[in-house]
Length: 83
Image (tube, rainbow, N blue to C red; front, side):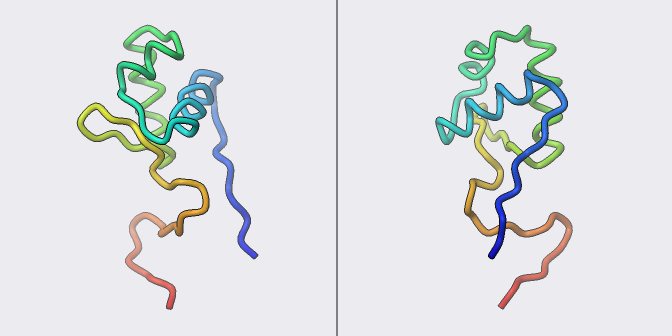
């Protein structure tokens, strides 16, 4: 039985950003920033860290979970697929 990995956050801001996106599935970048009440520079830093860790992805101003809970996960940099 597989267990779901929960993200680990370095800051409360990262946790708030992730939880907002997790609750809403996808969210406009500007909406997330307004809801979590962070200055633009700080928000960019925190979002960049979350995307670097592979928790979130951003495309065209839309932020979403990179790997929704329960979805099959493939390790980055590998092309191995389980049969």
